[in-house]
Length: 236
Image (cartoon, rainbow, N blue to C red; front, side):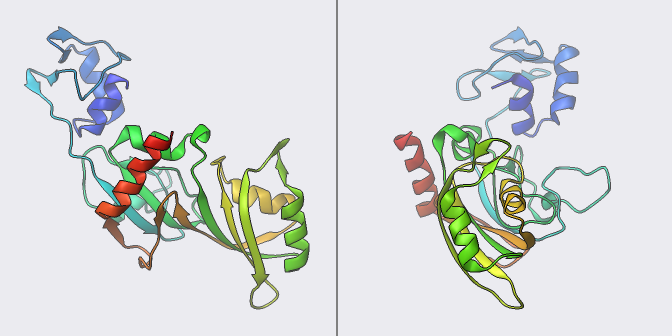
Protein backbone atom coordinates (compact mmCIF):
# COMPACT_ATOMS: atom_id res chain seq x y z
CA UNK A 1 0.00 0.00 0.00
CA UNK A 2 1.02 3.65 -0.30
CA UNK A 3 3.15 4.94 2.55
CA UNK A 4 0.78 7.77 3.45
CA UNK A 5 -2.07 5.28 3.70
CA UNK A 6 -0.01 3.04 5.97
CA UNK A 7 0.75 6.00 8.24
CA UNK A 8 -2.92 6.95 8.36
CA UNK A 9 -3.93 3.38 9.21
CA UNK A 10 -1.38 3.35 12.03
CA UNK A 11 -3.02 6.46 13.46
CA UNK A 12 0.04 8.68 12.92
CA UNK A 13 -1.85 11.35 10.95
CA UNK A 14 -4.46 11.84 8.27
CA UNK A 15 -3.34 10.97 4.74
CA UNK A 16 -2.78 14.63 4.01
CA UNK A 17 -0.89 15.06 7.27
CA UNK A 18 1.16 11.97 6.46
CA UNK A 19 2.09 13.45 3.08
CA UNK A 20 3.35 16.56 4.86
CA UNK A 21 5.49 14.48 7.23
CA UNK A 22 6.98 12.61 4.28
CA UNK A 23 7.66 15.82 2.32
CA UNK A 24 9.43 17.25 5.36
CA UNK A 25 11.77 14.25 5.40
CA UNK A 26 10.55 13.02 8.79
CA UNK A 27 9.63 9.52 7.60
CA UNK A 28 12.00 6.67 6.83
CA UNK A 29 11.42 3.21 5.40
CA UNK A 30 14.03 0.59 6.26
CA UNK A 31 16.41 3.38 7.25
CA UNK A 32 16.08 5.46 4.06
CA UNK A 33 14.24 8.76 3.77
CA UNK A 34 10.83 8.06 2.27
CA UNK A 35 9.04 9.63 -0.69
CA UNK A 36 5.36 10.49 -1.12
CA UNK A 37 3.55 7.67 -2.91
CA UNK A 38 6.16 5.07 -2.03
CA UNK A 39 4.79 1.53 -1.75
CA UNK A 40 5.33 -0.29 1.53
CA UNK A 41 4.34 -3.50 3.25
CA UNK A 42 3.63 -2.61 6.92
CA UNK A 43 4.06 -6.28 7.86
CA UNK A 44 7.64 -6.38 6.53
CA UNK A 45 9.03 -2.86 6.18
CA UNK A 46 10.37 -0.85 9.12
CA UNK A 47 8.61 2.51 9.02
CA UNK A 48 9.68 5.28 11.38
CA UNK A 49 8.55 8.85 11.99
CA UNK A 50 11.22 11.17 13.42
CA UNK A 51 13.20 8.08 14.37
CA UNK A 52 10.34 6.38 16.20
CA UNK A 53 9.25 3.07 14.70
CA UNK A 54 5.52 2.78 14.13
CA UNK A 55 3.88 -0.50 14.93
CA UNK A 56 1.19 -2.15 12.88
CA UNK A 57 -2.14 -1.67 14.67
CA UNK A 58 -3.90 -4.75 15.98
CA UNK A 59 -6.60 -5.76 13.47
CA UNK A 60 -10.03 -4.55 14.54
CA UNK A 61 -13.39 -5.37 12.97
CA UNK A 62 -16.63 -3.62 13.94
CA UNK A 63 -20.26 -4.04 12.89
CA UNK A 64 -22.42 -0.91 13.20
CA UNK A 65 -26.15 -0.55 12.64
CA UNK A 66 -25.96 2.81 10.88
CA UNK A 67 -28.93 5.10 11.49
CA UNK A 68 -30.47 7.07 8.64
CA UNK A 69 -29.12 10.62 8.69
CA UNK A 70 -25.47 9.79 9.37
CA UNK A 71 -22.69 10.35 6.85
CA UNK A 72 -20.20 7.57 6.12
CA UNK A 73 -17.14 9.80 6.31
CA UNK A 74 -14.60 11.01 8.86
CA UNK A 75 -15.76 14.62 8.44
CA UNK A 76 -18.58 16.41 6.64
CA UNK A 77 -18.56 19.86 5.02
CA UNK A 78 -22.19 20.39 6.10
CA UNK A 79 -21.34 19.54 9.71
CA UNK A 80 -23.68 16.55 9.69
CA UNK A 81 -23.20 13.69 12.13
CA UNK A 82 -20.87 10.94 10.87
CA UNK A 83 -20.76 7.26 11.72
CA UNK A 84 -17.42 7.85 13.46
CA UNK A 85 -19.29 9.86 16.11
CA UNK A 86 -20.84 6.54 17.17
CA UNK A 87 -17.61 4.53 17.35
CA UNK A 88 -14.56 4.12 19.60
CA UNK A 89 -11.32 5.75 18.50
CA UNK A 90 -9.35 2.98 16.80
CA UNK A 91 -6.23 3.90 14.76
CA UNK A 92 -6.67 3.46 11.03
CA UNK A 93 -10.24 2.22 11.11
CA UNK A 94 -12.28 2.87 7.98
CA UNK A 95 -15.53 1.70 6.41
CA UNK A 96 -15.91 -1.35 4.19
CA UNK A 97 -18.30 -0.10 1.52
CA UNK A 98 -20.37 3.05 1.94
CA UNK A 99 -24.03 3.56 2.78
CA UNK A 100 -25.64 6.81 1.64
CA UNK A 101 -27.11 9.42 3.99
CA UNK A 102 -30.66 8.04 3.79
CA UNK A 103 -29.73 4.35 3.95
CA UNK A 104 -29.39 2.54 7.26
CA UNK A 105 -28.28 -0.88 8.38
CA UNK A 106 -25.10 -2.90 8.52
CA UNK A 107 -21.82 -1.08 8.07
CA UNK A 108 -18.58 -2.95 8.63
CA UNK A 109 -15.45 -1.03 9.64
CA UNK A 110 -11.89 -2.25 10.00
CA UNK A 111 -8.21 -1.33 9.90
CA UNK A 112 -7.38 -4.54 8.00
CA UNK A 113 -6.88 -3.18 4.49
CA UNK A 114 -6.25 -6.49 2.73
CA UNK A 115 -9.45 -8.18 3.85
CA UNK A 116 -11.42 -4.94 3.48
CA UNK A 117 -10.45 -4.92 -0.20
CA UNK A 118 -11.61 -8.50 -0.54
CA UNK A 119 -15.00 -7.56 0.92
CA UNK A 120 -15.51 -4.70 -1.54
CA UNK A 121 -13.71 -5.42 -4.81
CA UNK A 122 -16.14 -6.40 -7.62
CA UNK A 123 -14.05 -9.35 -8.78
CA UNK A 124 -14.68 -11.20 -5.49
CA UNK A 125 -18.49 -10.96 -5.87
CA UNK A 126 -19.17 -10.78 -2.14
CA UNK A 127 -22.90 -10.82 -1.46
CA UNK A 128 -24.69 -7.83 0.09
CA UNK A 129 -28.30 -8.08 1.26
CA UNK A 130 -30.78 -5.20 1.41
CA UNK A 131 -34.37 -4.66 2.50
CA UNK A 132 -36.12 -2.00 0.44
CA UNK A 133 -39.63 -0.74 1.14
CA UNK A 134 -41.01 0.78 -2.06
CA UNK A 135 -44.11 2.25 -3.68
CA UNK A 136 -45.14 2.25 -7.31
CA UNK A 137 -45.74 -1.38 -8.24
CA UNK A 138 -47.38 -4.56 -7.05
CA UNK A 139 -45.24 -7.39 -5.68
CA UNK A 140 -45.98 -9.44 -8.79
CA UNK A 141 -44.98 -6.60 -11.14
CA UNK A 142 -41.74 -6.05 -9.22
CA UNK A 143 -40.94 -9.78 -9.22
CA UNK A 144 -41.36 -10.01 -12.98
CA UNK A 145 -39.21 -6.92 -13.57
CA UNK A 146 -36.41 -8.21 -11.33
CA UNK A 147 -36.55 -11.66 -12.92
CA UNK A 148 -36.19 -10.00 -16.32
CA UNK A 149 -32.98 -8.26 -15.25
CA UNK A 150 -32.43 -4.57 -14.62
CA UNK A 151 -29.85 -2.41 -16.36
CA UNK A 152 -28.36 0.71 -14.79
CA UNK A 153 -26.33 2.89 -17.16
CA UNK A 154 -26.11 0.10 -19.72
CA UNK A 155 -24.93 -2.63 -17.36
CA UNK A 156 -27.14 -5.24 -15.77
CA UNK A 157 -27.22 -5.20 -11.99
CA UNK A 158 -25.67 -8.35 -10.52
CA UNK A 159 -28.75 -9.66 -8.71
CA UNK A 160 -28.11 -12.94 -6.95
CA UNK A 161 -31.60 -13.55 -5.60
CA UNK A 162 -34.68 -11.67 -4.42
CA UNK A 163 -38.01 -12.00 -2.65
CA UNK A 164 -40.91 -9.57 -2.90
CA UNK A 165 -43.95 -9.36 -0.64
CA UNK A 166 -46.69 -6.89 0.15
CA UNK A 167 -46.04 -4.27 2.81
CA UNK A 168 -48.38 -1.91 4.60
CA UNK A 169 -50.14 1.13 3.14
CA UNK A 170 -49.68 0.14 -0.49
CA UNK A 171 -45.95 -0.61 -0.25
CA UNK A 172 -43.93 -3.65 -1.25
CA UNK A 173 -40.93 -5.15 0.54
CA UNK A 174 -37.97 -6.31 -1.53
CA UNK A 175 -35.34 -8.59 0.00
CA UNK A 176 -32.51 -8.22 -2.48
CA UNK A 177 -29.08 -9.84 -2.60
CA UNK A 178 -26.53 -8.42 -5.05
CA UNK A 179 -22.85 -9.02 -5.71
CA UNK A 180 -21.74 -5.55 -6.68
CA UNK A 181 -21.27 -2.19 -5.03
CA UNK A 182 -21.84 0.57 -7.54
CA UNK A 183 -22.72 3.87 -5.87
CA UNK A 184 -26.37 3.94 -4.68
CA UNK A 185 -27.02 0.91 -6.87
CA UNK A 186 -30.16 -0.32 -5.09
CA UNK A 187 -31.78 3.11 -5.26
CA UNK A 188 -30.82 3.44 -8.92
CA UNK A 189 -32.23 -0.02 -9.65
CA UNK A 190 -35.52 0.97 -8.02
CA UNK A 191 -35.50 4.19 -10.04
CA UNK A 192 -35.15 2.19 -13.27
CA UNK A 193 -38.31 0.28 -12.27
CA UNK A 194 -40.23 3.48 -11.49
CA UNK A 195 -40.32 2.69 -7.78
CA UNK A 196 -40.20 5.21 -4.94
CA UNK A 197 -37.89 4.08 -2.14
CA UNK A 198 -39.62 4.62 1.21
CA UNK A 199 -36.79 3.09 3.23
CA UNK A 200 -33.63 1.12 2.55
CA UNK A 201 -31.50 -0.95 4.90
CA UNK A 202 -28.50 -3.21 4.40
CA UNK A 203 -29.07 -6.40 6.37
CA UNK A 204 -25.92 -8.38 5.55
CA UNK A 205 -22.48 -7.95 4.00
CA UNK A 206 -20.75 -11.17 3.06
CA UNK A 207 -21.00 -13.58 6.00
CA UNK A 208 -21.85 -10.80 8.50
CA UNK A 209 -25.45 -10.02 9.45
CA UNK A 210 -27.11 -7.42 11.66
CA UNK A 211 -28.26 -10.18 14.03
CA UNK A 212 -30.51 -7.94 16.12
CA UNK A 213 -27.95 -5.16 16.58
CA UNK A 214 -29.91 -2.07 17.62
CA UNK A 215 -29.84 1.07 15.50
CA UNK A 216 -26.90 3.31 16.34
CA UNK A 217 -25.10 0.54 18.25
CA UNK A 218 -21.88 -1.25 17.36
CA UNK A 219 -20.07 -4.43 18.34
CA UNK A 220 -16.77 -6.13 17.61
CA UNK A 221 -17.10 -9.08 15.25
CA UNK A 222 -17.12 -12.48 16.90
CA UNK A 223 -14.32 -15.03 16.29
CA UNK A 224 -16.66 -17.18 14.19
CA UNK A 225 -17.48 -14.19 11.99
CA UNK A 226 -13.81 -13.34 11.52
CA UNK A 227 -13.19 -16.96 10.59
CA UNK A 228 -15.84 -16.72 7.86
CA UNK A 229 -14.31 -13.49 6.52
CA UNK A 230 -10.89 -15.14 6.37
CA UNK A 231 -12.48 -18.07 4.55
CA UNK A 232 -13.41 -15.67 1.75
CA UNK A 233 -9.69 -15.05 1.22
CA UNK A 234 -9.03 -18.77 0.78
CA UNK A 235 -11.83 -19.06 -1.77
CA UNK A 236 -10.50 -16.15 -3.81
